[in-house]
Length: 261
Image (cartoon, rainbow, N blue to C red; front, side, top):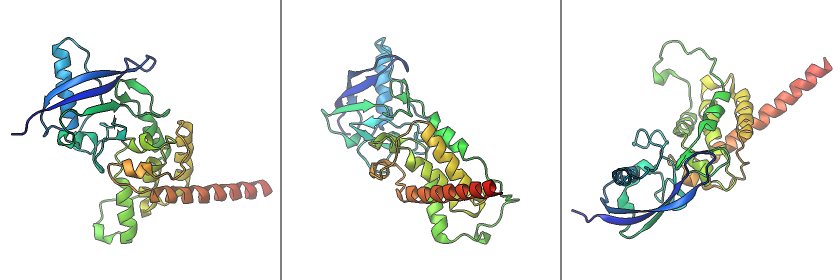
């Protein structure tokens, strides 16, 4: 059986949105290398409660790398040092005995801190809501092989649909841009027949909402795709920009025609 790890944690503690925050040091002793990162935090919290301390607040839900709620900065990297891995799927065997680990919340104007490591990510929900609904009637379920979707389009749509909305792309971006998230949501519908009727209106609405939420602009720096636990490519941002430009030009021409009439 592997010996337990003895670690020093530097954790961001903040009592509330308007409270001043600070880094607090904790000793995490005899931690099993087979624990996940969140299980390690559970152990630290249990010990804090037993000693009369205030447990560290952090987001989590599925603990299976699906929901994306576990997102935190670990030693300056979104979700930690392992690529294509969420914090809940990161195991403590990644670290060595005696390591110091810095744990912070996402840092972005669009993600205000609620408490400790918990941030308000409802801005991402509002961006999705701005996209509206799909009006194409689908009727009863069809056999998948009967849907006329080219394989490349289907593959690209599925890749984009893998986005779990964790916000790692925003946290890793030097501009705090939500472009990878927004473009993934736009692209996975824009590549499918059912998403065509609202395709360009969707791009306009979702990009406008993204800007309203206070996220920064995209300069294709590329840190977003490196931090994404689902490996979503910045190619989706190119697709979003193309749809947005086409929608903007079409809307401008429609206004000219309406004005002339």
